[in-house]
Length: 412
Ligand code: NIG
Ligand code: FE
Image (cartoon, rainbow, N blue to C red; front, side, top):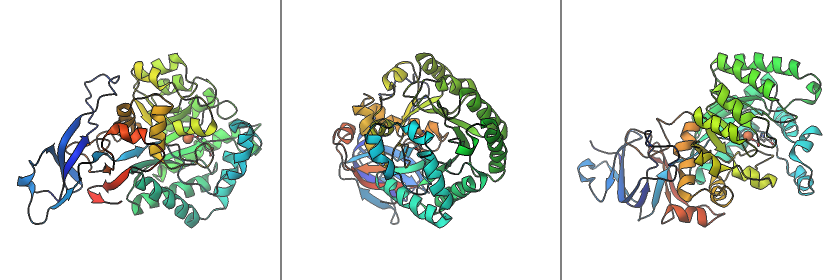
């Protein structure tokens, strides 16, 4: 077959190919081909090999690009973000430094609720422009797919506005978006004494959002003083009936049993998990729930890191994502989250690379399409100005990207 594009002279090709038959504990393994090439046709990988075995795939139209001996990986996947929102929260930054907690700021009507106000008064164009700027940054850092949650409306019109902006960006921007409805992100002040009434509204809204085909996943912020285990269970069960795939913000601050609930309900992922119990982790392993860990949030909130080592040892598939949002993690830099994967979560560089590629693809149910460099998968990949995987994690705080390709097209 004649290729549209060949990348030759790849020093190290980390395919991140997953072997489904292998134990999930084997996250530290990465297939590495030295002195490699990849060839692409119609936006998909058509062959992967070593040295210069690609000559039969070239004609006068084929573009041949020299990777100059650098490292190539699959496009990075940011599988947990709150991409579309109005405003920013630097006004809370100093309060936080003085020790006022994230939940106390929320209880005072700040935090998520202040972003809800800013999102409500933003026009669609303003939300689009702001989120586009973030996506441009993410792409520069090597991210080719992003999960984007709503959750800064807490009423139907604004939730729809956020999700529609995300859909438009999915069409217009090289990054692919995966859409999540997070109507249960906080309790508005006026419903503080009447959770049931607010939850009833969410159950109505989720049906309409599904009818409009605006979201594939439904998520809940299950946390002390936000949505209880019982409330989260009710919301997620109804979401499943409506046809959503499930996610949950679980055991971020208090050990409530969110990990256990994720397993009971068959969530695709449970996210945060800094305070997850050992039993909950075991249940997640049994039910194949992906643990989506957000180390840049631990860093920014000055909290402990999730026990990734235990999760890996117990056979849980671990992913890492940025959690980009205006409160607990105002940074689009997934490479920094990866570096914290080593420095904070004590994962190995290979484990971290798997966590932001193949394992992140499982988090968004795209494991057969993206997340690894394999024949038939979409040609999303990054050339890093880095000799090996270790260097990416060790030389921290900078952007290592040399070039980014999405669906076989050069985008950075
Ligand atoms: O994942 N924890 C809840 N939601 C977000 C934070 C959102 C915000 O603070 O605006 C998170 O950390
Ligand atoms: Fe989040």
